[in-house]
Amino acid sequence: MNNFFGMLARMKYINRWGLMRNTNNENIAEHSLQVAIIAHALAVIGNVRLKKNLNAEHIAMMGIMHDTSEIITGDLPTPIKYYAPEIRDAYKKVEYIAANQLLSEIPEDMRDAYRDILIEDESEEWKYVKAADKLSAYIKCMEEKNTGNTDFSKAETAIEQALEDMNMEEVRIFMDEFLSSYTMTLDEINKQN
Image (cartoon, rainbow, N blue to C red; front, side):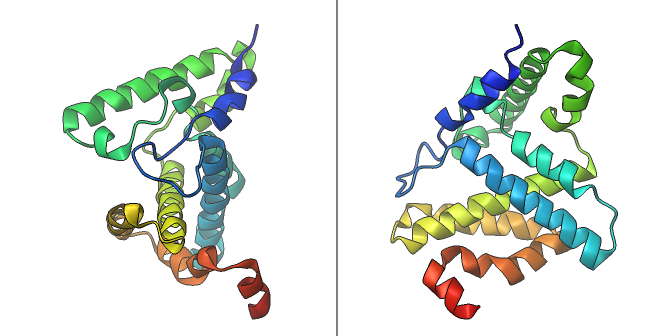
């Protein structure tokens, strides 16, 4: 029995932002799609504007899979995950074990095709996924704030600083050119066109 795809289907049951009051709940399936879209955009920006040679489609696939270990572990809220270095390091190990458990659910002859999109490493490609993950979280904070929910204000400030600290030109371009439309209504977007 190969359970990998059945396990992935469970992404829709893992909610994010468990310690926060949400006006709109978000699960890891929804989040992962947004991360994939943004990661792809960052790679395209890198290729087109900064003359890099990135595989945008591969990076997008990594974005889709970046939180799959949470099917097994659940979503550990960021304040807990980064409360102490010992917790952060232990959770990284748990995520690695969970990702390898998922990989073991794939038939052996297919594992190589999934290994580098399931197992996070320090590669250049993962840097784009991490940036997209932060941008997705930042957008969530913007959207919540836009509805009047101030619970996300401190998170928004911290994530904005983390994005700045990444020092990625692609992130700056994305934020400058695309971010404002995330809090616009459809009528406002259409009016601009």
